[in-house]
Image: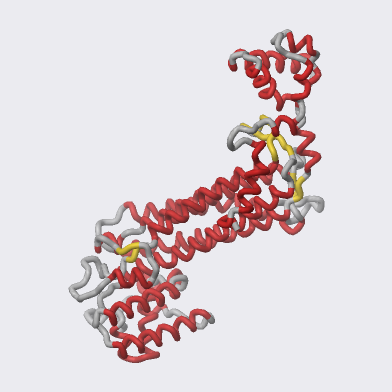
Length: 456
C-alpha cells in the first residue's frame, strides 16, 4: 500500500491520483522545502525531540538533496503526490529510518504554507532587483538627455512643454511605488507558520520561534488555524505584481505611441523589434506589445487567487493548492517583462529635433500666457478667459498664437508688453516650471536618484 494509505482498503484511482498531484507546481518549491526542513530539524534537536546524532544524519541527507536540486538532478515522482512526501522518501533512501523522524510536530498543511512563503519571499527579492534595474535604465536614458524638451500630453492632446527626462522620471516614480508595495508584501509574507500543524498546533514541546529566527523570517504565527489557511501574502504579491504590470503596460503604450511615424519622438532599436511577414519595411515593437498584453494575464492571476479563497470554510482545504500556480506564473511573467523593458529602454533612440519641433507649437505656451497675466495681478479665471479668447482668434484667423500682433493681444488684455513673445520658447517654458516636482527640476532629480545608493 502506498505511503499514507495504510488505513485505506482501496488504492487511489490512477485518474484521481493524477488529478490531485501538485508535482508540477511543487518543483518550484523544492529548495524552500529543504530549507524549511533543515530549520525544523534543528528545532527538533534543540527541543530534544530527536538526538544530536539523528539531527546530524537528517541534516546531512538534506544537504545532499540540496546539492541534487542545485545541479538539477532531483526528480519528483507523482507517486508521492507532492514535494513534501517526495523529499521524505528521497531522504529515507539516503539515510534510512531517521528520515521518518523529520515530520515530527508538523503537517503538510503548515509545511506547504512555509514553503510557499519562502518561495514568495525569494520571488519578491528577485522582482525588486529587476525593478531597480529598470529604474536605472530609465535614469541612465534620462541622464543622456537632460535638456531635451518635448510636448507633454493630457487626454493624448498636446498640453505643455516638459523635459523628456521628466517624462521618464514619472515612470521611475511608478516603479518606486511598486518597489515599496513588494517590500510590504515581503513583510506580510515573512511569517513562519511551521508549528501550527494541521490546524491545532502540537502537544509536543516545540518552539516555532527558533525556526523563525533560523530562517530569518520577520515573525511567527499567532493562530494555528489562520497559519495554515492564510494566503493573504500571495494576494499581496499578486496585487503588487498586477500594479507593476499595469505600470509596465503604460510605459509600453507610451513608447509605442512615441515610436509611431505620427509622433516620431523615439525609435526602437532593431534588436528590440520584429519584421512583418508581408511588409518588408515594417519594424514592429512586438516585445513591448507583449509586455502590454501580459498585464491582463497578471491581473487575471490575482482574480484567480481571490476567487479560490472567497468560498473556503475555516481550516485547511485542498483548494489552497490552486493558490500556487497563479503566483508562479505571475512571477515568471513579470520577471521577463521587467527584463525586456530594461533592455528596450536602454536601446531606444531619442529623436530630439522632432520633440523640439512639436513642443514649439505656440498653443503649448497658452498656460505661460495665463501665468504672465497672473503675475501682473490679473485674477486667474480672468487671465484664463483672456487667453482662451486669444487662442480662439488665432484659430479662426488661421494664425499661430505667437503671430498675433501686440495690438491683437492687447485687445484681450492691456497688460501685454513686447516681452510676451519671449514666452513662445518651449525650453524657456519648461525651465520656468520650478515649483516642487516640476519639470524644470528633472535634471536635478535624475542626478539625486543616480547618486542614491538604493537605486543602484
